[in-house]
Length: 240
Image 1: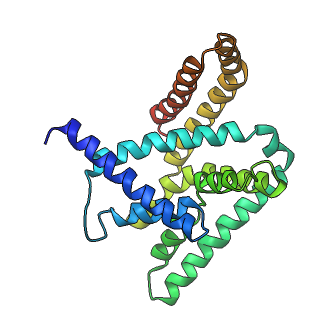
Image 2: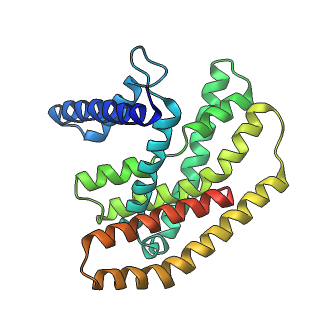
């Protein structure tokens, strides 16, 4: 089977099972995203049955994540985060610390080494911004007070997750924490945020306004895709 045909097969099977999961969840009066998650588990490598080409499916998933995160950015304004920064930042940091402590405590109760417990707490600490956004959108609650608060806290969690991604493997491997490496990651993250804010506030609105003035839906979709993929590529190049 050629790589092209295999890609089409993987995409078709994944979408078909996701559709079945979404329909089942809807019939049970649950969010379709629950069905999508169960469908992903069903065709994953840790359950019996069909397992697709993991690198290809991972690439497709990355594209989906890029668009979902772009959708999160469209639905959320930086002003919203500034308006409730005390609750969002304090609540997110408190939740992260509390969850890690719970994971470490559970690990100690099960006889795990302390570092393994901390690692477990770090793994479960972050909520999915994309899942929260999709759930709020399906209930038309993105603009509600609790919707804005949830999205604000999840964005702060995403920023903290950058440090956890660097820190947790070091703890699990027993290599200790490399402070200089953490500082480098933080510096790269700040550079990316500065570039994103500058381009996002000054350049992107002007470009999109110009494209809107052309009255072409196709050109606008292409422009939005370029912005989404361009931001993701810049972040990847900076290693954050």
